[in-house]
Length: 435
Ligand SMILES: Nc1ncnc2c1ncn2[C@@H]1O[C@H](COP(=O)(O)OP(=O)(O)OP(=O)(O)O)[C@@H](O)[C@H]1O
Image (cartoon, rainbow, N blue to C red; front, side, top):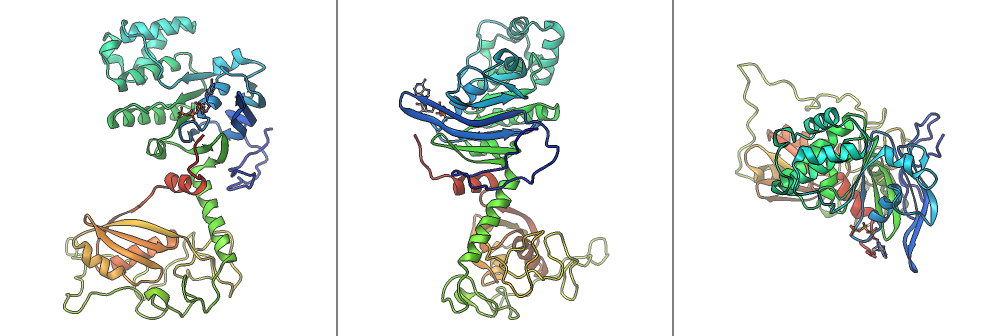
């Protein structure tokens, strides 16, 4: 069984150590203490991570961080100076030919032969891989949706199509693991979406996908787990949700350590106090329409029927949800960590500052009035018809914001984080250093 590797941060401190599992399956890629040096320059410094089977793993790092060097070791093109890399349990240094049969590798900026047709190109490589060309090429043309242009000369294809053709080439020998170096870096938005959809389809076929990029948006809606490399060091690795949750727990723990004293003039309000315009609990917490504004109209009845009661409407006791610790009411502005019920009377950790964009039906300025001055609400602005809310808290607070708007008759169309999870993790764990 492999040594379990949970998400880690530089310096060895675990960020999101996965719980030890008795029968964790063998990872598709296992990298341990990998070092590499060009001249006197340490390009990779003690890089360790796992890619579990069936993952789409995004390897993120700025230019020059060492992504391609790591990939060249994984694909048997570069002998590591120290450390060990295995693909499906096979050591890349000891048995490179077996590893090559297991992987499909698409280098960055790889060219395609231009003066052949799509079909001829794939048939050529199918022969090189010694696979029965006709059937396999048909299957790959189908999967990559290149069948309708199979007789087209490669030179006349768009960049996106050429990229799909390259992906088709590396699928011909049915590899278990796909290793793609910056697969979408030169592509237009449509081609990127098409490549992303193809990667998701390949994952559903059981492939493990390892792809590198320095463009976060390219990875955020396709990757299931990530590794972030900075100046040759891995600063964090693991499933995105797990890293995000763990970082949040660390921030909350740090906040407990620096919890302001009850008479602190700034910062978070202890219960009953209200710095920076925060209303004390029990008093009208959120903003209300200024004098002269009509009160919100109730939702119109649908087909003559009265609107259903909103869960948690005044007078109703909300059922304890998964994020509510039984016996503890959620304290506005305070995070509740599932599975870690705080002792009664012990203040919950101060939550972190976040921003969301809320799209509402109708007048956004009116919606903003309802939120200003609410507990944990730091700033409310209306930009381009969206209500931008800066607040302290986690998902419970977001739910509370939505609930408050709905109770005041504001229809909420959607809530979007200002940064997605991957961007937040990246900004938090990297220092912006390049080598
Ligand atoms: N063969 C080589 N000889 C000397 N230095 C090299 C060699 N290959 C890479 N480097 C240096 O090692 C560092 C890491 O390069 P690498 O290509 O692995 O980074 P990367 O993260 O893939 O960057 P990019 O996104 O720009 O491709 C860079 O500073 C690069 O200049």
